[in-house]
Figure 1 (cartoon, helix red, strand yellow):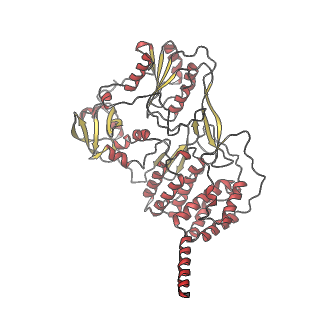
Figure 2 (spheres, rainbow, N blue to C red):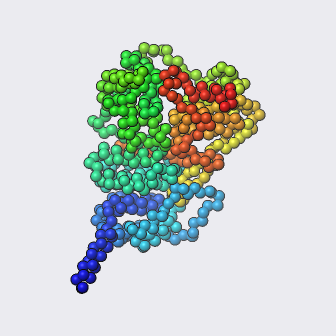
Length: 549
């Protein structure tokens, strides 16, 4: 009987001991969160009194050796104690003159009983309640922090340097990305997935690829992740002499970029590409899902066109679909200069009209090319029309103020913002935002039509919101990119990145991120329409102007 009891006790002890062990990913995930929390919350760390990066590098070997919750917690407790005492201050009351936005805020992990001792959780909570009170402010364009540290000296072939870079990047997004709450996947999960990868990569190329994949989990069309090639690794990129749009998993040519090469291979607008080097368009879409940042599927399909139509090899096999049959062309693609020049029609390229008068007394404005200096002439030419079509399937010039003054009868708010509340990292504050128009009895009286599609992002979406304040505005087209606002940009060794820095909302707090500007009348180009040379979106707008439906 005693042997049975002893055996059961040993088994119970072994199970308990095994359960108490924590994995390397668990330890590093928790360390990342604690390190980032102390970086922005601890008075001495946030105040710049210690070299916080170096301290992480020094502590990582100790953390690596810890096997149990108790050992791990003790290392973090001692680390906090080494920073010195945190002065207890009077309770920090919520600001009376500021409305906070809390959808991104979550410090519930401070009470992680699986990894943290009660003593450690208590220390972290005390720091939160007596946190650093930052006086740092954003610049006038909200495009960077005043004191932003760049990282250029680390060797990504070194594991601890890779860990530091991952921790730095993850925590910047954790505390200063306004749309964290609308990510497809919890940002914590992205950290847990990426950590094992960056620990095992063999070189800096694999590390940068892992970081780029992680950046796509932000689901933000403003995210860029430009990797600077190292010496001797620059690729000879070549291009198809046209561009296009993906419709029904086919790539349809919509614009000729180099007419001489297009002529040689008989490439025309409306041509349908089904394969490149024996890979279908769907294959390319699937391959690029983890490497292209976009707020929604529409924007992703727009962005994926470029990698599909570029190559590292000049010999490219392209399969077209013509009259229901496949036609394969063995092509030679050229560098950017040669693939984008108009040799046969030199001097004959017609400049795009900034504005013009269409039939039936309808005005048309190309927002991608019109400039502020052109606005007075545009107003004079189109003020008596029954409708003006503002084509915003592009990136507008900074003309929103002059045009909205013309369109509106009075001043109206069209956007409000959330920006990081630096006195409580992770929280945001609502700000007044932007207004359009002024008291103007001579404002435009006709219909205002705005054309939008996936090419409209950021400034274009914001300008569309501005024009929606006019009394008689109708949005026609399709879903926009869903990435409004400014961009915070950061430089690191071998890569440059950025993301949306402030949240942009309608005055009633309706969201725009990932949703875009929702059209009143949805119209998308078709393959047949492109082949027939039609602008189906503009045609639908003109029909609406005439019929009202």
